[in-house]
Image 1 (cartoon, rainbow, N blue to C red):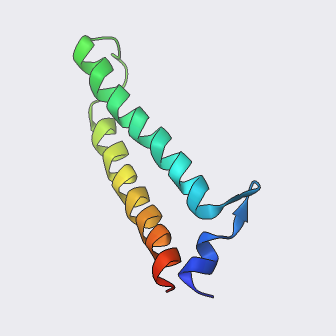
Image 2: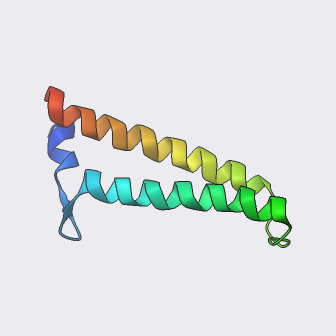
Length: 76
């Protein structure tokens, strides 16, 4: 099974690469929200280390999403 075939595997009626893109977008929004809300003082009970954890998770998802997206065009 190629990476392109895995990218087109249906999950919730959408290709896996699309679902990963949606999750990536939500993850990036959460990461940015943590930083903004901590700076404004509206998020007291969440430590700032969660911003870095979410950033690492977002980078991992972006790499996976990018590899799957590129594999569709290059056929690997």
